[in-house]
Length: 275
Image (tube, rainbow, N blue to C red; front, side):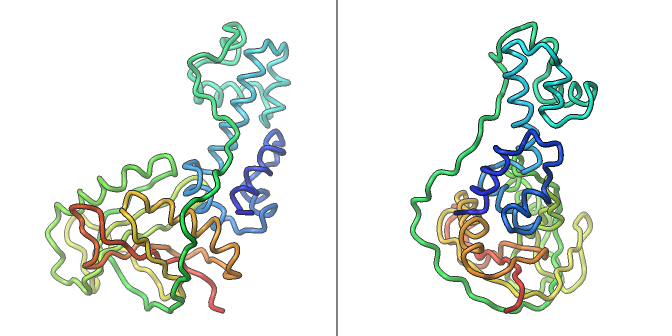
């Protein structure tokens, strides 16, 4: 059973518990915060924290539309400690107050989040990765913050990078998309070119320390890379016995990748503890 399937089951059985946190879900799945965050985001398109909040508020909305007489009781059932905190969150989610929805008496027009389930995969089994040590390196590039809901903006980030002149101190033929700073809500994504230490004006330097990696190859079109990430974090790693670390994971593009068509494949490097 995948760790995301376990997490979804645990959340559905405990989301009304105000003590439900990323840490408690990770513990129930026997996974680290980092691993669960990455797996949940690529498998569902939601950050775990946002999904829990949306599920709580969805069930609250259904209760209010059905005429629940005590809004504070609904708030407490949804894991909120006060009427005020519940009202703020409810308005942010749905654009109206709990009182207005109860008076309205229906959820038509609201974007409700039903309980998710993971469909069974139909792709062939993933090939075993290479396990290698990689020396520290530095890239010069553009950094943006994303959530699982906003990752569609990453291709535009790469297009912005292409407008910059190539760095004079390029250190290799590779280009990188590096994920750092994963915190349960989102992550930083830096797209860039390996350099010896100089960043052209407008670009930022990112230093990636020496690390042991499991290296996978995504052979399909770049638009399907999320499915490969899902297979890695949600299925392959839990079954492998390898322990993912909190280091940066990254995509490494070489001459096989055709930026015009999106074909050619890309390597995915996932930091793991040395065995």
